[in-house]
Image (cartoon, rainbow, N blue to C red):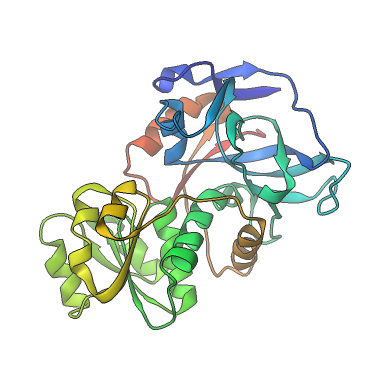
Length: 308
């Protein structure tokens, strides 16, 4: 099968198209023919070896964790899916080797959900990792409830834009930081946009004079460290940066969860949340897709067309 993979850590140039054996299908695995693969910031960080201390790595390593596709066949113990089912998945195992940038991937059944009929394959591939990150941050870490005010840093990105929509679905008011070119986009999602950078605290306080109830940070650095001052007394802070722990907040590291994924799929199916695809690349241009995501200036999601 064709797959975009690496045989060593490094820059975008180490990611190339390879011919690899088709994966074996164990008793609790589902063989999926991939239509689209989502591209996430974690992908280029894995490619460069930043999480080698956390996960066992095996080369050649097929990159990617997001997919939309069709079930080709199932393991002997699988009852939840059947050949021909359209699915989405967040595929993150305890070792890094068989990702979603390939024509076929064998996925543990606990990492899949049925794709809703109203969501096309292209958009569906951008939902799992970003959607689960946002969902788990708001529900498990921040415990957001109706009527509260949430501040999302980097609200126009893949995770941020879904966090805005999920928070609005929960009945919260959302303030989102973004560049001015993305303000209309955030308004279309139901957020109150503010420009990041110097003077951010004053701009947020103009909208929430007593402070916000919760902050979900997707930027880290100075933005994260300035966030506690924007909280009301008793407010909560969560971030995808580990530095949040020293600030008394919660560190968000997304985990596979079939129930969470099914809930997200149901919301997408009724258009309560939608995925904006910022750019699409063919599988052979996965390196360009990594460069696009690593630039940090995209709106929504980048996907690879694997099935073309």
